[in-house]
Length: 458
Image 1 (cartoon, rainbow, N blue to C red):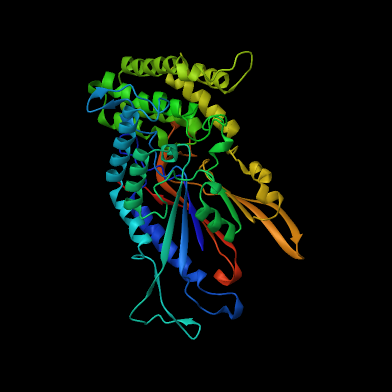
Image 2 (cartoon, one colour):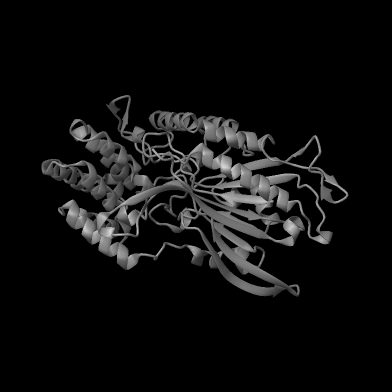
């Protein structure tokens, strides 16, 4: 039995919230239920407890990018950035600090993972003549091997080196991972153990950042920062930081705390609506509104002028830097109310045009050669189940399906009623995919579940 989840985006507490540990208590119950159902076999529908579960964390589990510590630490500004030399002492110390704080901030969540891996939370009744003995005094613990793959927000775990090995070992110990302390895999081929697990379940799985030019540089590979890193740090992280730094004493606490949730607003297209909503709710002074907008405009200029950003601009060719520059310049000079109306109109026109990377599954060698039934990507946070093809292989029907593993994340979603009010409702979104082999689950080969958990009421 193979379970895949992705995009947990567990942070260090300085920029937005991580999904609560209670969500993983819910997941533990679901995992226990899946293990029980997988133990019912196809032939004769007899019950035989499964012995092991492989749980793959498909990238963006940690989120080292979304930390204010790239901008300030202990009240002092810092100059190190994700696109600097990853083997410099300053860079390594920065990643160590963010990782240590992430482990502390999410300690309860990591304890749940560790207890799962140690067989403390998942157990099954023994079998007696093909049926479960529900009254047995002892239950059978199920071993769970947890495999960590990296994405674009935790790519630092893919870097080689002794000090990175030590960081990874700390994560392995905290979460009970099956990984070694060597660089965590980005592609299935990076780990023979992972590759074998996926192959036995006829699955190909990768994070999916490799299909996103903003968040993956094909020439540099996964051991390098991207334009997406720069935008996250210098705009989405820096904007709340600068507003608080320049105007913190003038603005309500609720406004400053709300800005920390920028990374959790969905769809990302309506991020300016979130800012405008906070302004309308908490900022009454018109001069303060103008000052907040001026900070955004200054940061746009600063971002576009970064040497790292300029280095990605190709002369005499319209590229991603030119497109990004055009979009950001569009946000400059407009008051929030006008910008909100514009973004609201764009949202209505583009609503439902969710970003899908399903087409890339058709290019996978395992799809073309009919060796994989399932192609699984993460990254987009958009859960999908897309039929790809069906054919005959050795006179048997061979269905092939693309699935996206969605996310485990806190979200603030724009409400449908009266969009002009720009209201949001927060919730935790959870998706998990399960794949069965041989006669598990009475012969059913996969399940896909996605749900939401309401945010705690204040």
